[in-house]
Every structure is written in structure tokens, then in C-alpha cells.
Length: 77
Image (tube, rainbow, N blue to C red; front, side):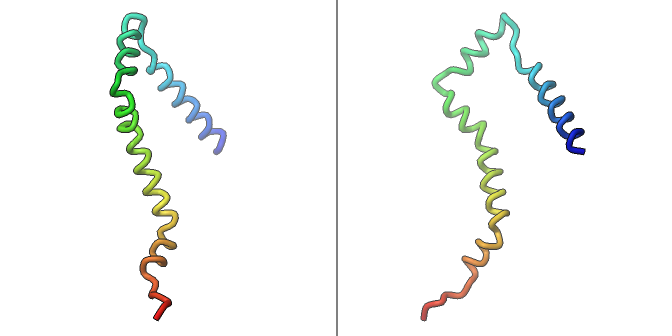
């Protein structure tokens, strides 16, 4: 099963890899569009869903400890 999953993942990455290249005519325009002053903003906007998924996953992983921390009764007087 692991070999099948690894093979499918490799195939999917090769499939996407071939579509990511620009032709000789378009490549300079694509590179000029990527490397603009808005590059940092575009990169952060692109990575925002990954950050949200990471925070959500960490929150789910530690949900029990977080719930105990906020719902426990105070131990002091």
C-alpha cells in the first residue's frame, strides 16, 4: 500500500511539474510578473491557507489540554 501511495504521489508531482513551465516567449513576462515589489505580499497571501491549516491542526491536536487549561477551576482561594 505504501508503494502504491508513493507511486501515485510521484506521478501527481511529475504531472504538475510539466505544467509549471512557461514557453520561451512567455517566460520573461512570467518572471517579470513574479519578481515585482508586490512579491512579498503575494507570497504571504499564497501561504496564508497553509498557516491557517497548521494553526487549526495544532489546535485540534492540543484541544484536550487547551480545554482543561481554560475550564479547570482555580486552585487558589
